[in-house]
Image (cartoon, rainbow, N blue to C red; front, side, top):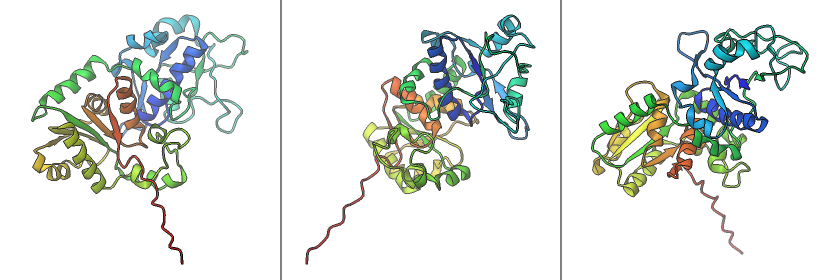
Length: 329
């Protein structure tokens, strides 16, 4: 079984991957690990990064049979999925015809072009390979599939970079990892939070039925004063010496250091744009504070959950509305 991991950026793709892994296990089909889809500035087409660039393959085999897409296309596809005999599955027709149109648009076309794959229509009784236009999974990841995160282990390269950076942070000692999602696109998304109570990764802290609270604007886009106040409490509680910040926009390095100057705490960010190293570092922190709505934070939360490490969220738990007192006359 193979599929296109085209939904959104890395955090969303990771959610879909876990669901697809569970689906292939349920079907008892070997999963061809799809590459990660990335978008680079100045490029009109997406690029496909091999799965094992960021994660080890072997740990996944403890759960189910997997091979890389590259290995499959080079060694197996010519025999069991030859050109002229390739079919693709979709939930419903895409475009104006009654077909899947699996290669229409970006990143769908570039994804399959990377492996020189074109789909053919033949009778549905010969399907040695099942290829899906997108991941056969839900977003956000189902509650029962979250534990599959234990089989996703960072590649040696990513882990080496993460540990080297942690070793460079001074003063040495416990550190807090935080994720600040505060770019302009996120601000616009958060405008809809009160009308979308389970927006994006919200179930990770609010529950899948909002049983743990209701979404608020502060939960999605926490203001600076909440971040600094909450961070001060976490630093004191964990006797942290430094803060590692991952952000899509404003890392708030100066704000954090000014606020925590009396505690002699330093704030750091990774010098290069490497979201996967950011994720690995946050996963290794002594405590992590994430954004409840963000699927990027959700990746760290799942990794820490399977390793029994603590996580908290900005502006959570959501305070209950204060009941009004009514005077009797």
